[in-house]
Image (cartoon, rainbow, N blue to C red; front, side):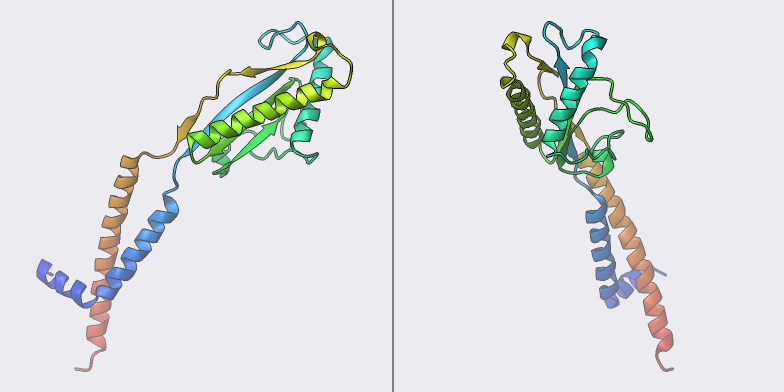
Length: 214
């Protein structure tokens, strides 16, 4: 078959080409997920006179862990924490926009262990601004809760539990394909779509020719 014959068949069976190209475009739109921005911050609950990077005092650890767990529970309005995505980044669990506040589990799947008075804040979103605003807003809210829960106890500020943020500033990272990678993927799919449309158009044309009365 010559190139001229192929072009004539494609012209006669143009509807086959259109259907295949539309299907190719829908496939690309389905597979080409936009990238995501994400960030993780730790809030370490620290006893008076201690610092976040120092070894935890075992005598205070249990109290600090219980306090951190209570704050986490309040952040979730008393509902159990969703830990399905704890071992993987949120974007790896299929979350495009959302956040998570949890007390990290150092145990296994069947038996939880919470030895560290730390709250992990994780956020993933469509823009760096959204992620930064979300993380900073959660830190501000947790800081206020920690202060509020100790305000009515009569404990002086110098003797109150405080939190230290690690790292001090929100660092936003990006995961996803670059614009060049998207363009290459689209070009590859388009070539495949053209090849498939040509094959189907020729097949339909031959079947139609055979079906015609001699």
